[in-house]
Amino acid sequence: MQISDAESIVMEVLWRRSPRSAEEVIAELAREQHWQEPTIKTLLNRLLKKGALRADKDGRRYSYLPVLKREDWVHGQSRSLLNRLFDGRVAPLVAHFSEKGKLSKKDIGELKKLIEGLDDER
Image (cartoon, rainbow, N blue to C red; front, side):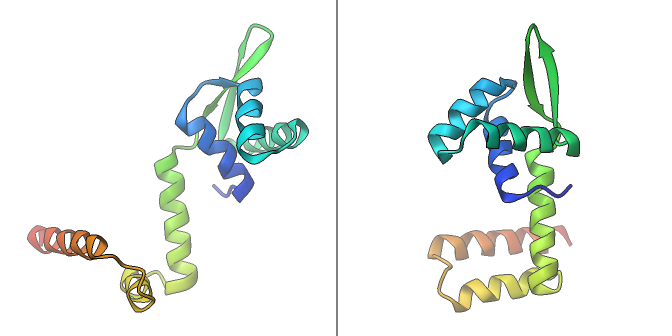
């Protein structure tokens, strides 16, 4: 499921805690992002239409809950990034960060452990 960067910010609010009313989502995003209420309501409605959220009637209000799981969204985003930039391969991604000096000693240690774990599984 494709969601925009702005929609993902709305989703993050609901992934952190849900269900939440529109008023709660609006209050948090107005404070964090300085977005106006109509913008946030538009984003909520887009997410509803895409099936990323569901809205349950709670009296006169609606409570919003994520249908799209964060883990599924992250997996899709990761796969898309790898496909677009690195021909679907992880090694060139790691090499890119290594060459740019963006891997800390801690990162390298974690990568070594992951690789050792993969070797042990085979």
